[in-house]
Every structure is written in structure tokens, then in C-alpha cells.
Image (cartoon, rainbow, N blue to C red; front, side, top):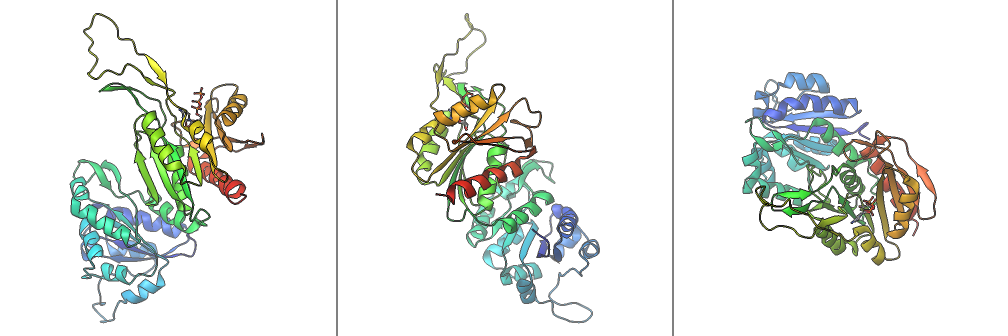
Length: 403
Ligand code: CTP
């Protein structure tokens, strides 16, 4: 989708600027034309020579070209581009963009931009957490810019936290998603549940499961990329959502997930139940840490959690689409069909733990979609992002646009 697209890559002075060369490579490989605009301090981290060699275009950094005196027109750049990406975006540049401090070529180009702008912040975790940075990013978001959230990991300071510039592959994917989305979910609202639930035993222990949340997050991102407003109700996971159209509600227990999902469902056109919800919670939850040195081994009494999908299924309106997942180890089809009926789903996505490429942790999945009519659609093993696309295609083409 990036083929033939004209992209301005704005580079600012942060250590993550060394990754800009990889980013340019990926854009060029995808068929895009790239014009680099650097701040003067970015040149301390990566040389213009490297970047102009990769883009095949002179890097723009100053208002005037020193030896000829010719003007570098930020206005022309703003009209030329199909998108502008600022990666890495330092706290300083973010602040200048938020407040219109046009004291360098990059910010003047940004202010002249007619095309969508993507901002990939990169900074130390305390800078990232500072109220002024958060406020400035909120301002940029409110101006319609797309924020590519930084990842959590080791930072240049060797501290660990949120602030690493998103990897070049994911920045390219964010733009690709933007351009490839046919926006066929524009004006629609979709609820997605994802991840595991944790059921407390005492203040420090819980019963959980191995769900990573990857499938649910992929579906949420796919729906958002296609123009939907998404409510993502997530159990405890270590994932970040990159699309600002996704409103994330973090929960811990099945009861909290039920409350959040029930609260949102009536306003939604579709709901996809990806979460691995605990079937039971602890009836005799201890309010203090259970100690080892007691006479008796503690006994945990379980009680049934409510079925979230079935609760939504019971209140489903005409025109609403409800999708469930079934992860089975045996008797797969019969079990999945029984769940589809019990929960009043429109279709269920079956994956079997007997398939080595399917399941909780893996980045791939192999699914069979079973409709309420009994029709079965088997799919090949694919990355979860492409499985998400298949599922959303079915929701859009066979249900939402059908009704
Ligand atoms: N589900 C739910 N709420 C629950 C249990 C399950 O919303 N309390 C949803 C899951 O998100 C999934 C579908 O129901 O979409 C099937 O979940 P699964 O755990 O496979 O089925 P269960 O009904 O819990 O049956 P079992 O554990 O006996 O296989």
C-alpha cells in the first residue's frame, strides 16, 4: 500500500535516530519515495550522507542552502507529501509542534503539512511520563495527528520503561494500515475482549491462564485501521495498542470484564469475544496473604463466573453481530458448535491446541470459522494480524453490510 507514496521523514535529535536509516530502507523497499527533513541536532546522531544515499535525495535541514542561498520551501514539501512521519520525535520537538514554535525546518514543514502526520516519540521514561509531555501529545492527538505509542523496554539511560521509539517495522505497518484501510468500518463501533482474567486467591496470588492477548489486540487494531471506534476490554497483558481509535479498558477479573463489556455492548455494532475468561473465581478469597505456617493446608472454594459472551448473546439486538472463540483440545467441531448455540453467536472461530501453530502464545493461528448456519470455513496458518483481517472481513462483508 505504500507503493508510490511520498513520505516526509522528520528526524529529531535523539539516540533512536540511528534507527532512521532502517526506517528509510523499509519505506523505500515498500516502494515509497522518501524526503528526509532533519533538525540540526539530529545530525549529531546520524549523518545526512547516510540518509541521502538511502533516499536518493538531498536531506533538507536548513531554511536556506548555504552555498547557493536557495530557499528550501516547507510549503512545497507540505503540498508534495502523502504523509509525514516524525521518528524519533523528541520531547522538545513534540512541544514545538504542539505550540507552533517554528524555529527549524522540521517544525515549519509540519505546520505546512496537508497530509496526515504520524509522530513516534522516543525519550527517557521520566520525560515520557512528565505531565507536559503527556499534555503536548494529547494536543497533537487533538489536532488529528497519529501518535505511534513508544514501546516499553531498555532505554538509552539503561533504565527500563516506556519511551523506546516503536520499531521501524511497526512504524511502516502503522502507515501501511492507514493507507490500506478501506475504512469499511467507518462510523461503526466494535467491542473486543482480550487476554486472560486473573481471579484473586489472596492479595498476592491469583488463578490465571496463558492467554497473551495477541489475537484480541490484532482484531482491535484491524477494526480501528478500518475506521471503527473500538472498545478493547483487556485482561492483564503486556501489549500496547498503536491506534488512537482504540479505547482500552483494563480489567483484572472476569466479573470486571463482564461489567465493562455489558456496559459497552448496547452501543456497539459488533462484539468479538477473544478473552480467555476464567470459568471460576475464588469464593473464599482471603483478605490477607495466606501464610505457609498454618496447621491446615488451605482449601480454595471455586464458584462459577458468569459467561460474558452468553450474557451479551441474550441481549443481542437485530443487526448486532456477536463473535466468539473456542480453543479446544478434543472433539473440536462439536464443542465449538455447542458453544455457538449456547451463547447465541453469529459465528465462532475455532482453534485447536492440537495444531502446533495455533493457541495462546504463538504469533500465528490456524482457525476454522463456523457460522450459526453450520457452514464451516477453514483457513490456513497465518500471522494473527492476517487472521484478524479474515475475521473482520467476514464481520463486515457477511454480516454488517448484509443486514
Ligand atoms: N467466554 C466468555 N465468558 C466466559 C467464558 C467464555 O465471554 N465466562 C467466551 C470466550 O471469550 C470465547 C467463548 O466464550 O469467545 C468460548 O470460551 P471458552 O473458554 O472456549 O468456552 P467456555 O464456555 O468457557 O467452555 P469450556 O471452558 O468448558 O470449554
